[in-house]
Length: 322
Image (cartoon, rainbow, N blue to C red):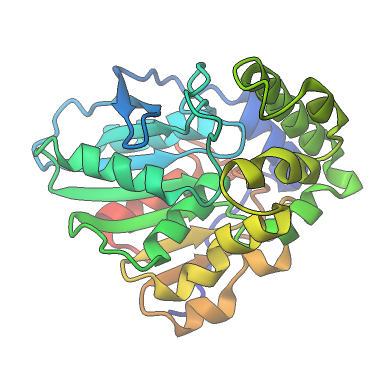
């Protein structure tokens, strides 16, 4: 499909990528509370938690499943924003907390990563077992968007109930995007991610003293070092390079067989050039790519109660609007 022309016009102050990114992530007030938290027992003996938001009147059996970004959770503003948008239009919404991201360290040494599609597959099966959802849409943000796109492009049978998907601010090439995130201009973000991830590793170390030491965690001075020490090896990869290569969604995009929209801002400082797969989108029957000039990283701010990417996701999923 041709790359789509974007109609997003950022308010003047938020044409600055950093201001848009920081405001949307830390200062936005959504006015949405999740309802019931449900624990999903996974096939490998571990668990993850789903935070549910319910529409007042869901007569159509529609569900949105949303996945969050690195060091995030279901309570982040972008997750609550997409939940508010869709529940007000008749969808139930299941907000997925990755392993160890709901406030409690998971049972196994492994946790989550950008390519752990087996967890998303289990969540989808779990939701389908409820027998009330006839139509499922997927939404993913940042790392969760990469995971979602990899899931859709893998050699697997996608449940027929999954009709469409939207992925926002996606680092399609994990290794190259990590290099972008490590640039001096992104210092504040990379240090915040490091702090959050290292704190979680320190908590994990108390449970798995033989696998990892406090000294090793303390010595990590970059996100790459964390991927090298923990993320790659805990999930069966020999090093960070192999993890990045095998888990990047870029190599799976051409296989996607349901209508899928990627929204990546041109000025997103987290992303590399490979995160704008224009040639793949042009050759695909199902993959759509929209590149707004502004928006930073999940910062598509506009007047009104919905952000641009939320309104756009609803149009694409519910109305089939391109």
